[in-house]
Length: 371
Image (cartoon, rainbow, N blue to C red; front, side, top):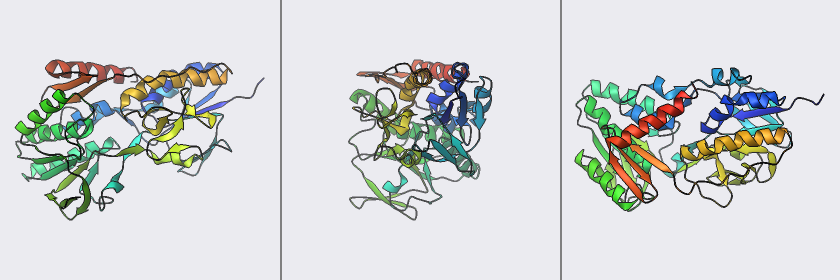
């Protein structure tokens, strides 16, 4: 009898939820399958709606333990501190060591707080990652709203996440009839620069009608006291700062000894494994696929999930691996906090309640399959 092989899934991200839900196929191949993650999975699709008061935190979470254990796998609640690809071992934050034959990493991304001097360790500065931060921010703001405090909030980053966060901050304030003073700051010439220009204009009009002050061509470099300082010397007063810029791969992938991209993560090929090690796979925001500069959006991790699962199975059976080709167009839907959403797909876009209905259906279908 051949020796049992061990497959370890590091991180309960979008891709690994799919692998965990189909772990029985790996187990039937004789593999030991282990998922390692320190906490629940927080779904990014509902995160801004949770911030805006549309959803409670329980609706945005999935417990990965019963998901994988029901399929014959194991769950270890711990954080992976480093990956020794040469010795084929994982070192856990709790002090344990796990040996592996194959490992897949799906630990997401984080905000580069170092991009703004003084932002690190400032309790008034909140990052949009990890997603749980948005629930903590809502709790903080609700406590201030109950005290009838009027706050000045600055959101730094005018991409999809920063725009969604801004919209839902105004929605949350509306629930308490609070006049929240929100400034949205971006160093680009417009919001959501990768979306059609018409969509960006519609978004800007909607936010402006809610009283949001939008500042373009503005590069924030420093946090001093209750001020944000721009590169050109302009000063923006803010009691609370939300950082939605500069996403970079989780630091774990830089502790593998394998080739990485400075910001985008572990360098992988079309089979989704390291360009230097066919036993180390990666998906989602922590992976940098050769020949592509993929945006850090959950839609790519979701699409990669089936390929990670298939290629782990193929590896166990010594069969050829499937090649993943990123989609050229993808649907992006921004929850605007007022019962409407802004949808974009390539050059096409539409805004309204039908977009919000579609987003609600997609998000809840995704969550339902893993509960």
